Figure 1 (tube, rainbow, N blue to C red):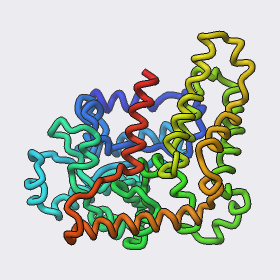
Figure 2: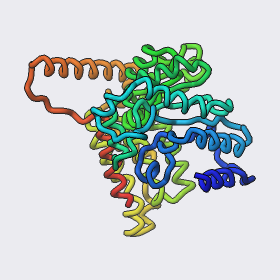
Figure 3: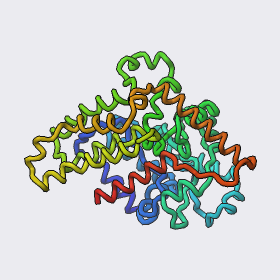
Figure 4: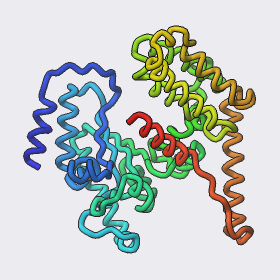
Length: 364
């Protein structure tokens, strides 16, 4: 620990220029990966040493000359001091768990440097060889611990994280606990970004919307047109062989859940592989290729209907609410004995995770 503290101090005490235009620096004290929190002794393992986290955030603050906020992401605790099982965990005291979390927050926030915490409402299981995926599923969610934290520390910005994958879920959590300052959504947003297109209208006031409403895309066709300009700009600056797959990947989930969305993703994947393929055959073939923006638009118009391409954010959100309502009715029907078996449909998050694995295999 002493060596780690010395390394921390020296790593921030330099005058190297900062070239990235960051708006904040976040210390992740919630990652449960064995490589990170195990051998690395950081990530969620830092929750077991609040004074060290306090020192780290202080070094981050002074290293950035106090120019940007320092924030902390954490969990509600770890399995320090006992062997985690569901029964053992459920038998433990909720109050002890909360007091430990509270002490961590108080210690880290005591210098007034960190005032913003994003809290994943699960513990991190470090005593077993759990994968990050296991740590997102096995420990139960305890939103009430984070809500209580937000209510008892009104001077801090407390955001809830974990298990919330939809905009309706975000809205519900904020309505249930107005003391919360935000909801952090990761995989749900990445897997279906258009599902969050109504965030401004639903979560913020009309007055805040006024400045941006005239320039916002009215549908996904406009999103692709704007993104196409960016895609062409990037390919003019960098080698398409190296960067195209990264560019197309960002647009691959725009139509999640829509008819023929998979065909659209397959088309983007083929477009992503074109530069490498053509350069092997004959580099001159790349010169006759249309711009990337045109290829992306062609893939969308070929595989997706006009109704999908031109559906507004409001229309899309209404459809999502209807789908969620139907899914709840089906679950209720099954729970009351209406069906003995029901085929479980993959969620957008599961589909996105599968796509990520396939992309990583292609890139390796």
